[in-house]
Each structure stands twice: as C-alpha cells, then as structure tokens.
Image (tube, rainbow, N blue to C red; front, top):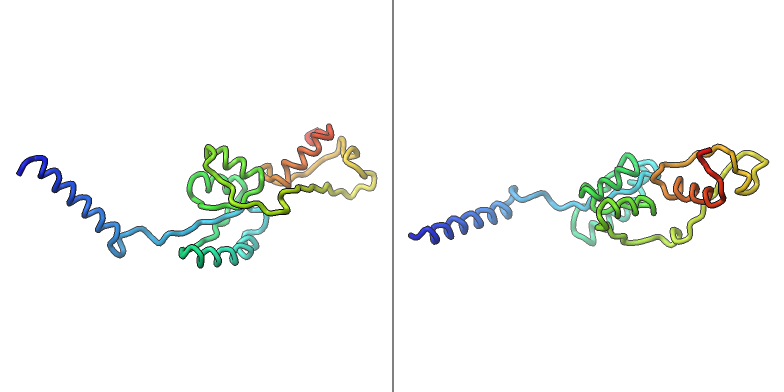
Length: 168
C-alpha cells in the first residue's frame, strides 16, 4: 500500500469516527438553547414574568428551548451578547449603541417599539419654585444607570442643550 493510500484511509477513518461521535446519542452536544435577556430596568422576577409569553411562543415556533437569563447590570447585558453568552437581548438605545460598537457592528436590531420612536423625559421635583427647565440651573440631580438611555443619557442631553450643567 502506498503512503498516499494509507494517508487517505487514516483521514477517512478519522472523519468517519468524528461523524459517528457527533451523531451518537449521549455524545453530541446538548439540545440548542436560545438565551435571551434584557437590560435590568425592573426586578428580575418581573422581567421573567413579562418574558414568559414570548419565550413560550418562541419555543413553539423555533422548536427549541428558550431561556431568559437575568443580568446584574446594563453592562452585563452588552457583554453577554458581545461575548456570545446571550443570543438576543432587549436593549435601550444607548446599550444598543454600546453593543454595536463593541461587536464591531455585528449586533443587528430586530424590532423597535412604536413608543420608542418618540422619546419623552420628565423631570420631577417637590420644589414649588421650579416650573420650567431653566429653573433647574444650579440644582442637584439624580440619574439612573449611566448606561440608561431614559434614566441618564437623554435627561442629561436635554439639560446640556439648555445650558444647564448637571454636574455643577
């Protein structure tokens, strides 16, 4: 037998063994799972409750297990998707941009809610002498997570556009 024929037989045997190992019961990888998460803008139990109908629908339509994976903070949702620990995540505007940049534009938006197309922000105070945005100059502010579009980024942008520095 020539060296070439021997090499072909060894290669064929290795490929065949690999194919058998991949398809043998108990030896193949686990059942595929779609791992879904969301920015933690509510309690994990509430996010899980809200996700359940969508998870059940996706399991039926996709014929695979769908799991909701809660994350500890906004950054964890971005890192989870970028590092392939999550397959699909509900982001806000800012966290989507972070994920898109971190993934070198591999993250693709699937859907946007109608209400997200027109953003509104409300500043709340207990002070009777604050009636418009300019009255906020020199006041102290409290924001949500720095990765939150509605709790930090947009309110800060509105203040800065009105020449109000929220840090002074």
